[in-house]
Image (cartoon, one colour):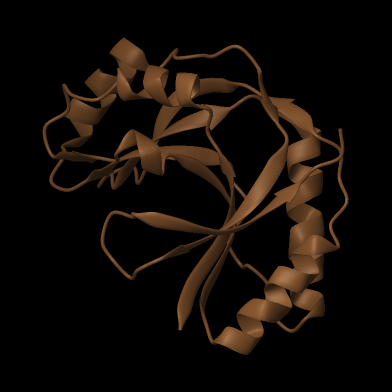
Length: 178
């Protein structure tokens, strides 16, 4: 059984910039930079034949390449912060890609994703981080931004059931049109 999800990779220079944000937040378990990604659609645990159907469906997606830029930091969980993330500038092409992925995966029988699509890069899992400490961290670093970077493909990743994510294995890559 494979635990699958689709994602966008983060270029090495952007991952390096994000890695410089590590530290200074008690209770944070920082994600390794090689595991940074933007999840497009979490699929979950599937058997081999379903994984093959998913891979085939993803080959049918035809979208143009586009650019993304990171814009700001935030945290999920207000009274009990549970993760720290980097956000993205609005990008209609990203939402269009996500919508097509969702339609195609439902077409082959996967249940719809019930969570609202909130594109982000998880930087740290928070355990025991206080709301004031997170607020202080964000007030000092929350205006983080990057220059736009190209997105030329999306990937199908697998992971082991674990806490905190990673390591991830790229099962297949799907190029976007130039």
